[in-house]
Length: 205
Ligand SMILES: C[S@@+](CC[C@H](N)C(=O)[O-])C[C@H]1O[C@@H](n2cnc3c(N)ncnc32)[C@H](O)[C@@H]1O
Image (cartoon, rainbow, N blue to C red; front, side):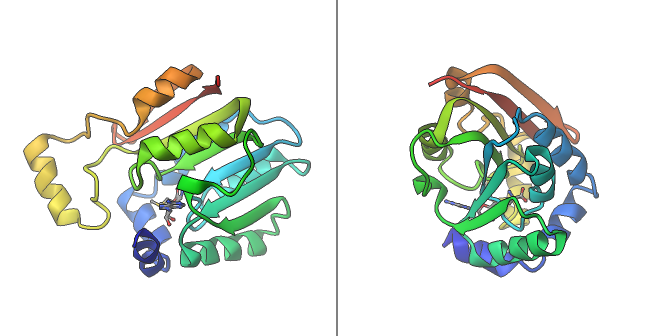
């Protein structure tokens, strides 16, 4: 169901994101990628990579010796990501269709995990537990998302109603307590008028 939701929106996803962020999403994407600590040769997982808006930044950050693996459930979002990767000739990126709840990677196989706008879409705790399974001890992790009422992207009017009823921000950040327990050097910052959070840290199994 979630895959077909994003399949239907893949063609205009980028335009909607840029429009709703007033063209500012590039700014906090850059900040989020900068917060990853990556070394030459590392494998970075971009979980829920979507149309690949973060892939060029990740590709440059990990360098020629490293590798970026983008994983997404939606074939059509991945198709857009593939077009981006081909046109930019990013040879260190591989894309796969798969479920973040059952990541098709071995235990302790990645040095860094990047997860942008996925936690508010899925069962955050289950995804984070799966991330902990595939991450190597000491892996660098960045989770970013919006703090708007859940489901706002699917039905903005209902979200607006919730917003008026409950106040502006989603007070509970998805899965954040679990991340607090397992990440050292945890940093949690707010961006774009407080509507976006970026959480980063180092995985301690
Ligand atoms: C809001 S978009 C974010 C895309 C991208 N990370 C970005 O920053 O623009 C959420 C993405 O997560 C994907 N997704 C949702 N549930 C998923 C799951 N269980 N496993 C993998 N991808 C999933 C959707 O297909 C969609 O591409």
